Image (tube, rainbow, N blue to C red; front, side, top):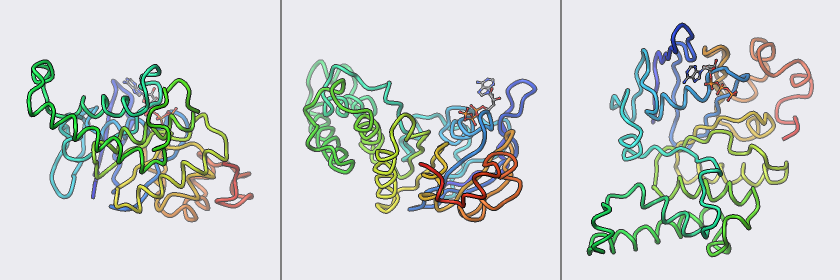
Length: 261
Ligand SMILES: Nc1ncnc2c1ncn2[C@@H]1O[C@H](COP(=O)(O)OP(=O)(O)OP(=O)(O)O)[C@@H](O)[C@H]1O
């Protein structure tokens, strides 16, 4: 389990995240929502070690990991979703995963040049994990296709597979369904649910409220850096503070979970 308490990040005079406490439980999907500029991405950056908090504590399975660097956090099992723009468009899906994974394994460049036994073993291991991750995201059939030729939704799945190939315990997904149509969004939502069911701890930032409300076990609502609500999708979508700051009266009238994806 990942826990944060009293997390604050100031940029000069601006508190982008202010005294936020919450937890991410194993096998559960915790969504972080809020208006533009509410501090969601900064919050994930603090959790993942990309930013050191001004104040507050991050604990992973009880261990204080506050301010730990992102590569150390990755070794402890935390993975972030990657933007599809980080994929190598001219390479195959499988090669993208193998390269992505190799960047995170321990063979040094010298090993690779000398093609040592360790590098060869690492290669086999990379390929195995890449194939496993591809199968999990439902893309075994696309392993040899060039990334430039696959759909935007398939690229999103490759980006998930990149995160999964590092065999994380926790994944943080920042707007995973940006730029895909409603039907594809539903498919990605099923995949995110499958990640949680496989035992992963999932953190999700997403603006598509239909998706969030249908998917999240818990929703944390940020506004101006502060947590204004936390609860089940039903609870937060009825909360007057949340409706005023973010969801709007139309959403409340339409009812949670029925809004367009
Ligand atoms: N590196 C930085 N330096 C200075 N200010 C920053 C920095 N990163 C974020 N901010 C500010 O902190 C606030 C929160 O930004 P953040 O990107 O975390 O919000 P967000 O909720 O993720 O927004 P969006 O939904 O638009 O992605 C904003 O006012 C932003 O301008």
